Length: 149
Image (cartoon, rainbow, N blue to C red; front, top):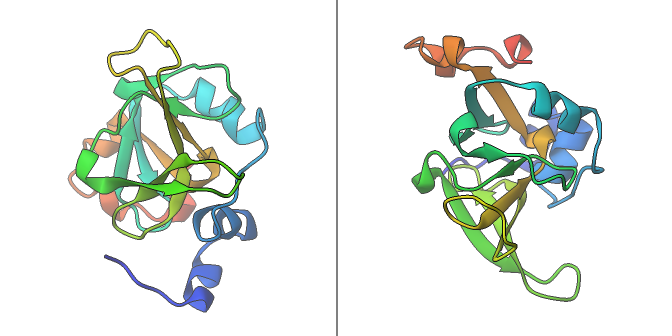
């Protein structure tokens, strides 16, 4: 588990990334990040806070909800869930298991034609995408954030 002070997180992340990842915020639906997500091809999605693999294009689908959607994590051990009541009712929050960063929420039973009938509704602002050509490099986890799209 990665632990940092609030000041260390603020130095590492943009204000929007910090608001979402560390304060359980939500990005606006159908924004620039979502449009970019829809255009991304094959690759892997990593946590912006700790560079842990979370999802891949193999589990990606278009739910038309305005946020990146996946039917399952690519590395189940790197994702954990918790129940939150921020909107006055229970929702299943999705968190990075390594840095405890807020990623979004997971919903079940919505009727999507996916293998799990789950929708991991994830804030694209807290994901770093690496195309497969870069993730096949043995040093892919060491690519500086400034090189990421």
